Length: 448
Image (cartoon, rainbow, N blue to C red; front, side):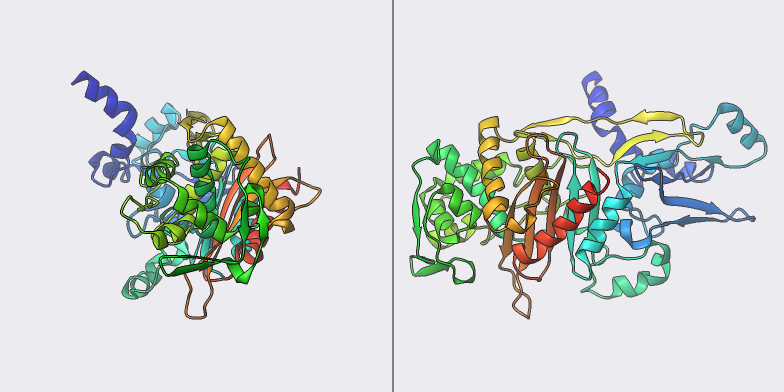
């Protein structure tokens, strides 16, 4: 019993406090004005306006820009409005103020939730997606602070009640889905990060690797081609990664033990729970000993049955940048009362080692080559260093357009920002996702 009480206090208490079934929280709504959600710079992302008659209206100053990550309260609760429900309906106002309000039958002001979100970076990510569907996640590799999280299509939380019936009556409407955490996509060539790591774990080194790319590879009557008909010729391991050579990675996939491939993916949290406070979907890796060469070839280049979420790929990228250590992503920096006094603080916390330092170092070098002379060389500039991996996921829409991916980080040995970009049905990673990522990196370094 004592052990369970300790477990509940430290592991489950927050879930219980924010549960819609917690009657204590429901009662608090009668006595407390819901507190604001603030950006890292103090800007209000959600606040409660009270008119002269005491009517309360939840207002979102930035409208659609923060819609998915901040969430809503009028049709159930999502996003931070859900995960921080208890804090927002808890009041740590000065005791004399609470006593006065009690006598006057007035409500106390709820506490403020101060997030890690950066308004300028969020705006840049939102604008970088333009009119495209997709998602962008940006976080600090060394702390886990989430600085931006954008998903499109979106919605206006200020008009959600008026729009609700139309939105839910249309089965094709997915505006309410946070694609950053719950969008499952074929990863395309960004998955070559996983395949490369599996190769190193099986063979110990990439030093003796060489491959001649003729543009196509056939096994069991299945032929796989390099993107856009490219023939890369003689390549070492750095070349196949920088050039994103499909045939080389398909060949690698067939040489790998299925157990090594699967264990590598799961060590990077495929098929596993993620350390996240927001709702999310698990990324999926299903290759097993019974999988034939055609599926193995496709899986090795991020096709087949593999599915990933943008937040998960941002976490893997951040761990690589942070020498193998994954810091738990978090969105709340601290909670303060209506006078600005801090009542609760959150700090960085390591989840654990996803890969060892040598493995991380090798992947860092490979990702640097992608920007130096590979498929993301348009990111090469004199203002900041970037390493990354492009991806073109063959999930084509009616016009024949694949999904466009980029994952990467800036700062080199002192990583500053990790990012994952997915732009749906838009073209190659180098032509679409890379420019979108550049807009976010440019905004991050603008005043630095």
